[in-house]
Length: 247
Image (spheres, one colour):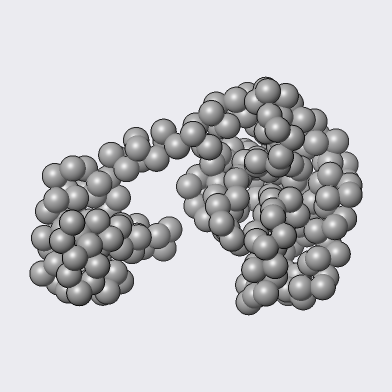
């Protein structure tokens, strides 16, 4: 494969696609060139190929966005597909019982990825979206996944910097290590106003066939509306049901 000053064709195409984010869902040609760090001519040439394949789309104003072809391809990822299909009935039950936001996430490197989210009617707004990445150190699902991550991953994450979202966000590595130990011991995590000042979440681990933690489920409620420990049995029951469905 031909390699230029900015890498292989494939690498450059991936850099273009990687320029999109939840804050930059639609961009012009010059925006894409700037955020990807590629020359304008290279960006234009690659976009033509990506458009033809369906990886990107162009609207009437000439702005580019991620194409449905990528969503179709991403939905085939085994870790999200089988997990989501088996978990969905139990996530829906948890959402129906609580009337709150319910989330399912997996760890990808030093971040988490949300593979499903059900929004409760009138529930507190959240910063998450399906397919979105987030820090492992702040959310309930993140704390569960980090608590059960390999030691080297945990060390890398806690080596920092740990992002602060609110005044309540835990950023001290020693405090976080103690919290993670508690999560492993008690089987659930509580994230109290660590992402936004008006929300807290309760999360529990989902185990795969080998017993390894492969995902985490959580319910997110408005701060002050429900004692978090009252939600623990519901969330743990949901996580156990999903784990059983994966056997």
